[in-house]
Every structure is written in C-alpha cells, then in structure tokens.
Length: 204
Image 1: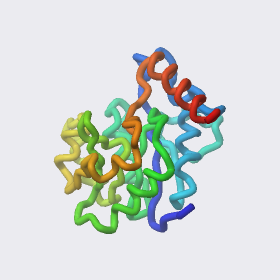
Image 2 (image 1 turned 45 degrees about the vertical axis):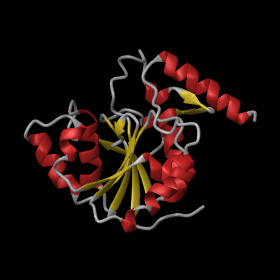
Image 3 (image 1 turned 180 degrees about the vertical axis):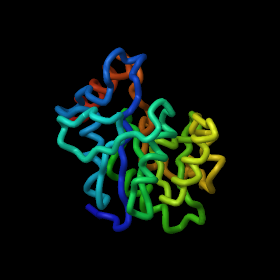
Image 4 (image 1 turned 90 degrees about the vertical axis):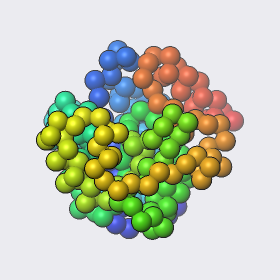
C-alpha cells in the first residue's frame, strides 16, 4: 500500500449530530467508532492523521486531536483549522461520517494532485461538490480563515476564496460501481443502512 510523502490527513468530527440523535462519530461500524474507522482507513497513505473536534472531545480514543479554532463555524471552520495547523504541503480532509470511502479511492485522489494546477482538488458527485472528501494545499488555510473572520460559514462560499479543481464523476466512477462513495450518515436510518451494507460486504 503506497504512502504518499508531504500529505497529511485530517478527520473532521465536530458536528452536533442533531438528526442522528447521538454523536455519529462514535457510532460503530466494523467494530470501530466511525471517527477511528476513518483514521485507520487513511493512515496507511499519509504521513500523519489527526482529528479536528471541539477541545476535549474524543480524548479517550488515543488519536492525535486538534481543537477547532472556530467552534460554531461548521465544517469550514474544521477545514481551516486543519490547514492552519498542518506542516505538510497537501492535506486530505475527510468527514467522519462517510462509511463507504475506500482505500483505493483515497489513494487515487491523492495521486491526482500532481497533475492539477489548482490549490485544492474537490470531487463532484451527483449531489454537488464534496469538500469533506477532498485534498487541499495548506496555503488555502489563510484564505479560508480570513473568510470565516468575515462571517462566511458555508463551505461552498469558502471555496470561492481559493483556486480549486472540480473532479467530475466520469473520472472516478470506475472506483465506485455502487454509487455509494459519498453517502454519509445523518440519520438512524442512514446508520442502519450502512450497518447492513458493511456486514454484507464482510460476509461476502
């Protein structure tokens, strides 16, 4: 399995999980809390992995933690926190609630960076841009931080502050034959469906 130099990863786990009714980062899939499962998924490919979350949360999991610098700013605050803290040039940002991401796809996305003229590579699915499964140059951190300080909260608005490349589905659909890569878990029904699919895959 290839480890890419100069690439760090950050898992965002600061959401309120209101629709789930409990902390979705701690919901178990395959015997691991989702946040830890995501860390384990990506760590073979990068130089380091850290979790961005409210200060003190998830300390018991034994993973590197970075306190969110902009509590209440949503995922955009998490992305900016990660990029401002990183010492690596490129940084993979992943939400903690994407149960169907694969190592194959992660390696493909990272390998896509050298051919891009942009400062971020953001996949696009049928739902739109997927900024919480994307890779950013750390230089984007300053621009995103400035946007947050101006009151920007939507990630889509924050992306307007940086030069990013959209990666359309035609480029990666061969890695996602089931069309599930970017399906996330927001509700108990989503979690039940993820459990069924993961268990089915584990039993062949």
